[in-house]
Amino acid sequence: MAQKTDKRNVLLTPKFRVAFPQVAELKSFAPDQKGRYSCVALFTLAEFTEKDKAKWSALVAACHKVALDEFKKPWKELDRSVYKLPFHKGEEKEQYSGFGPGVIYFTMSAYTRRPTILGPDNVTPVDPADFYPGCYARASVNPFASTKWKSISIGMNHLQKLGEGDRLDGATSAEEDFGADANEYDTSADSGVADDLTDDIG
Image 1 (cartoon, helix red, strand yellow):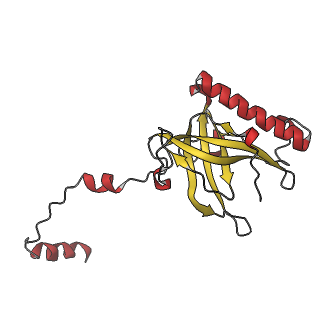
Image 2: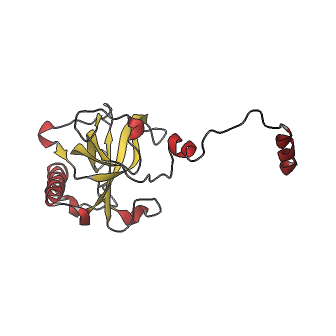
Image 3: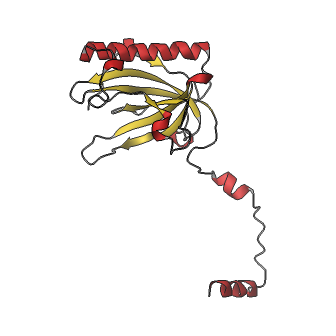
């Protein structure tokens, strides 16, 4: 599905927590589906600053305009059993870490160009491998509609990593795995110790 970015409609999101990032390479989620870059953004509205609230209101208003332009109805009046809408409550996927009550989330996608990821200084590039589930970020996005698929989606343009956070996928770094156990192996040790240990596994 082609995605056309309207530069007049590019918006910045409030700060969010990253979930399920797929930003290193295109990935298809179904056999007949075109590959895409994607990221799920988790927002806790109760933690919004006044600036965050303004950004959120602008994003909701943009989705409202897209719905009126393409479907002739406010997006809140579109039947979710017929239309695919971007905003979801965290309770819908509370089986996953980071989701749950108080969270609103949406998936943003890019179909042709890999998003640039910058660090907090807005200059230093961030390796996609360091843009992990649980870190904090914001994004430049643009809402768009597909009349063919009866959907309103959030297009992902670029990302900015704002800070670290506990990983949502439970993965650890190599430094964490090996740092707790110093490399103090004595290669001159009696090989008989190894022979004794084989008894433990039969």
